[in-house]
Amino acid sequence: MITVKNFVNGNFVSVEETIEDINPATGEIIANIPRSKANDVEEAVHAAETARNSWSNLSLDERRGWLEKIANALESRSEDIAKLESLDTGKPIKLARAVDAARSVANFRFFADFSKDYTEEKFEMDDATNHVIFKPVGIAGLITPWNLPLYLLSWKIAPAIVMGNTVVAKPSELTPLTANLLAEVIHDVGLPAGVVNIVHGLGHEAGQTIVAHPKVNLISFTGGTITGKKVAETASPMFKKLSLELGGKNATIVLDDADLDSAIPEIARSGFLNQGQVCLCGSRILISNNIWDKFIEKFVNFIDGMKVGDPSSDESDLGALVSFAHRDKVESYIHLAQREGGEILCGGERPNLASPFDKGAFLRPTVISNLDYQSRTATEEIFGPVVTLHPFESEEEAIEMANCTDYGLAGSVWTSDLVRGKKISEKIETGMVWVNTWLHRDLRVPFGGVKDSGVGTEGGRWSLGFFSQPVNICVKD
Ligand code: NAD
Image (cartoon, rainbow, N blue to C red; front, side, top):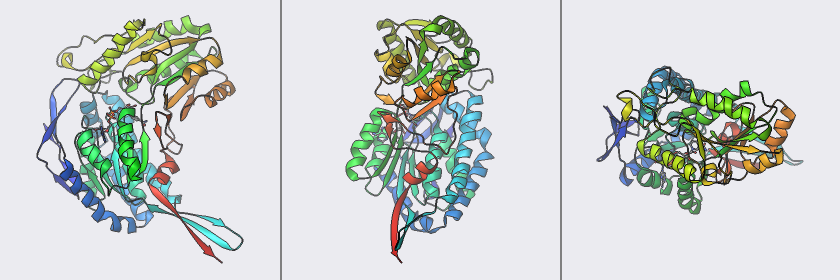
């Protein structure tokens, strides 16, 4: 049993009430975590405020050096990250190693390196020079979800602190363990006290208190669209700098000239990676009528062969969903699909697993066809191992179908004609589109959604811009 404490002003501190943290693959309680209240958040904000001046007075190079130290120390604990992430989320350990652990280290290393040129810009006039400098915004409130816990937390902490801000972060109450590991690493490397504070607890308590705190100048939130609206309702009238990375219902468009043998494993990955619990997952697959039968046969065969089970086994392609409540939600969408006339081509039920995984929140990967592309199942975010298949006649129809949801996060197009693929991509109303690949990430490029998928952009210079305040100093010659 792990005991998790808040990390405030460089110390690990207990709070009065705790919440149980459950391993969703077995149902066992694995940790007790703080249920922080307003006074606990207040302490963290006070620590962040006290640390503000001295941290922002360090040079950019000094702060970059701290990021490198954190990256190195985190890297030495990569296997611990993978084990904890797998235990806490139910995801396969091979995925936690390749994605969660690797990317968490990479985020600190990337921003340490990439920020070195983000210093000052000059704009010359005939008789004056404009110097644009980048000041810290102040105290950053960072709120993250459970699907990629340390990956997303480090994606916010690294650019926030390198630009001179101090941080109060609240990880998801469902997956607190790797945020705690990061606190240990930050403690071990000796980062100045109060620069990073981590407060655990519930969203409507600790999370809401951070968002509403008058001394927190900036909110970076990643989570669901409904929660994002609540965050915006509080933060916007307070004129806080706000970034919202929200849900998605991403389309995968398969054109008739796609090379199905190479595309299908990647389309399967895009539908089912992390049990379909990635905001970018392609959960609506739009398929040219010309290849409909061939695609279904190959795709369903591939998905049926995916192994669900023990997350610590390298054999498992899918582990458990994050919680029993979340599996209930995903199953309710499978029932809705049946009421909407959908035909389940594979999955749709829980796997038969041996003890202790018979008590876990597992679900077989599920493929559904025969649904109207405007049905609720095909337009609402399910965030689980469920994809729907829809035929189209023409490119125009595929684009109209892709754009028919309230979301606008990502999408992918599969074709052997790259010009055609790019042309279609330009017409898809999302922040990101991949052609013949998916979740192929370059950390320099913009990341963010349009429509109900969010406001603001992360990644590379967009993150550095968000976590800083540009100030122009115009000097007359
Ligand atoms: P969620 O919105 O339930 O919770 C996210 C975080 O917000 C948690 O830490 C939670 O405790 C906190 N929270 C809840 N209510 C709050 C409130 N009133 N005020 C402040 N904080 C509050 O989301 P989730 O279920 O943890 O994550 C799944 C969602 O996240 C999906 O919709 C997914 O698409 C989205 N997501 C988006 C991205 C992206 O980059 N766009 C990435 C990952 C996940």
